[in-house]
Length: 266
Ligand SMILES: Nc1ncnc2c1ncn2[C@@H]1O[C@H](COP(=O)(O)OP(=O)(O)OP(=O)(O)O)[C@@H](O)[C@H]1O
Ligand SMILES: [Mg+2]
Image (tube, rainbow, N blue to C red; front, side):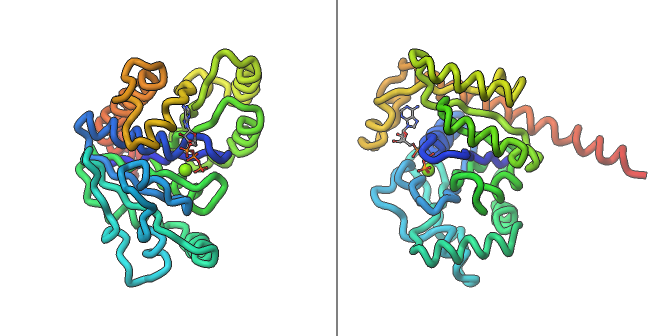
């Protein structure tokens, strides 16, 4: 089982949209998928098929020791298992943050309770980084997808947090979302990001801006079904293919990594 954290250093970048779309696209490729909403916005469930914001989820397990988070699991029509964050008041949200600050391993421990097959994947949608949720997801992940629009302010916040994100130790990939090549300013913002990232930007995945994406969400459908030949659908399928291949390669890496570790022992 591998864990993929979907993070960003700005709000409204498309984390939840991409987490939900990738969960479905990976499930359609035959992969066992769990999606965790680790953001008090509690929106992932709505993207994955709930018609209201889920009242309970991970937060209730953080607030009450006797509450098991997996009792709040849903399965959508695509076979994706998902756990909402749950509805929280301002005071409850602060208590959740305090618990996470006191228990930096809270998410890692929750993930350890999952009984997914080896080829399974957990996608974690997170609160905007830096946050307790974002930090724990980065620390627990095998792969971190950092979503940014190619806008100056968003790119500047990403550059400022790059070292902290890299310290998490996981593989870090940039996803440039809402790309509109017609806008010069986006080219300038990407040039700034490229200077900070070096090779990282060359390896970045790109998802184009598509006004039909929020409309598909509002209708409860998927852009890649509504408009399969659109550029953004093509980008999302390409990103899912890349992840699917990365996950397959990561599986075969495990024995090699173990062998390396075994060889290092005195
Ligand atoms: N490629 C895209 N083209 C057009 N609209 C997009 C694209 N990606 C995301 N959006 C839209 O941008 C808005 C924000 O997306 P989303 O809620 O997924 O971002 P987020 O990073 O999870 O935000 P938050 O910080 O509030 O959690 C939504 O209306 C979504 O439909
Ligand atoms: Mg979100």
